[in-house]
Image (cartoon, rainbow, N blue to C red; front, side, top):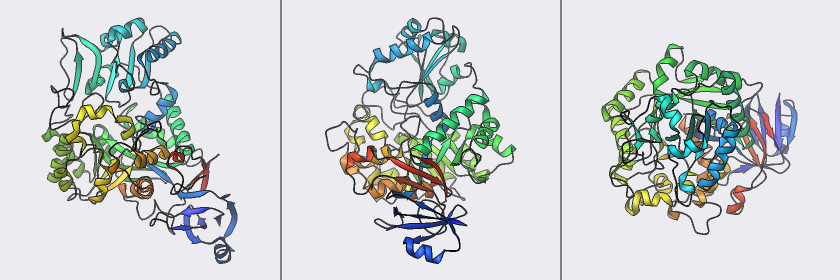
Length: 529
């Protein structure tokens, strides 16, 4: 027996402008669409309940194509510095947290971003020592490719003037060669490995907080990468199984698997594909480079504002190729973090050497995409995971990093679409806000809500339909589910995001104040305003 959903405007996303007024669902799937009257007549013996949508605008359930769900939950639980706009406020928040922390315990915080500060100040370990003389301190930058630590943390990690940089990372030093407390990419692990490990209960709280927050923002699923951190593959995956059990919570979690724990997945008897109705394993995740914020994204030419560096390669070309070869041996696609153009070139070269045979590879972020590399990507079975919110977050300071010539083919979402590339949209939470409505706004406006201009690189703006595709059909295509997810049509899952506004016709700024009325997953209402 099923449900008739009526008195709404259902945008099918099959093609632009396509809409119906009612949907009949049964056993978690869409059976038929049409008018309420015709569906009542056709399925009168099978309708056992009716849901009045009260005039809501209904879309296929939004899915975030790239994020770190447990990390997002941690951001909700920990001290969040992402909204701090100057160094003095950051200092005050840290001092408040230190005062509440027992002496000797670690002080942790998330999300600081010096590019938000008028002076772009990066704290030195000596300044952190003044704030926390009796506590080890670790502060994670918004990009998660850098941390700040104080002297106690450095001492516990055994990091000194004589410590060499690890492969794929850098210990930032002063003019005397002493560590400043600023650690980039793999150098972070030197401290993280001596920090207290999280408990299973903490991990469960973080994931539960993330799911609850995501469904409240209209998300029915997410493609997440968490399994290579925290308590290891087995315990972290067990946390997903406990939290998203279909009873307490239902959510469609597609799990990317970090290359360092891929063997653990195989040994546990898993392979690519579903594990029950709500969880599924996807591609093997690889990091090729870092991020623009710490100048660790790998560029083919030096940074314009730091000519002594071109970024950091996490792997050599040979190592990257061998990792992809390993994925193919396990019959897996790969999902490669590539922000700089040199990292993208390396990823393309390695994929060309070992093309995917089952599924589609994913290139995540792809922020610098010169035409020559786009032509090579077009010949591969790849989908690009983009993060629209990176535009308002990274501009205008990224202009100094890249310079005008490289900017002409950076953050080029419209150009990539026109070239025929398939795109999916995500937040990279906790790096950016997990809210898909903000992502849609960023894709069409390409500016901060407070900016009084036409947007950064306005020729790269997406239409409302293209922006919505990122979170519906695009996310489904990324995981080979385009025949059952991402549209409102018969045979597809009964996942809906119900809003109080028409996203195709409302004013641009109203995208940010649109309210989620209901989130529906598999025919069940999991959130209601």
